[in-house]
Image: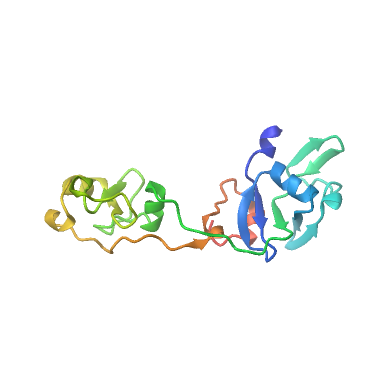
Length: 194
């Protein structure tokens, strides 16, 4: 039961109902109890903002997760709205293999071929042995065989051509980075990217 409380399964919206973060049920309960957030009672296309005092007495429906408390079972919210937060946080993807993979769309930047995770790795356009840095502007996704063939040469020396010059991804709304790893159906109303 405690594992339910510590899984990031509660979507947090700002006051404009834009997805900004993901919290655990334990964190969401604290936000609700302190009036920092209101839960959404979502059913049949209706979104009913519900304060803590009313939430703790809601009936538990068949598909709801619930936790046992001294008062009895309490439904775990799937979405909460932050009471006083209006901003949309912005951020840049984290630099690393996953960030480069996402920036390049899983496509080899030399061949244009869509890659599986086992087929791709990160290539330094200007090899480190030649002073190349490990930065957004010098790293691209490449097919393993192409990268092995390129070795410590520049692309033109290996007979390769980049599809596009690598650049740092732009800063994007935080909602772009939220993934519904637990498959919470109620989140689909608020996330454009699944």
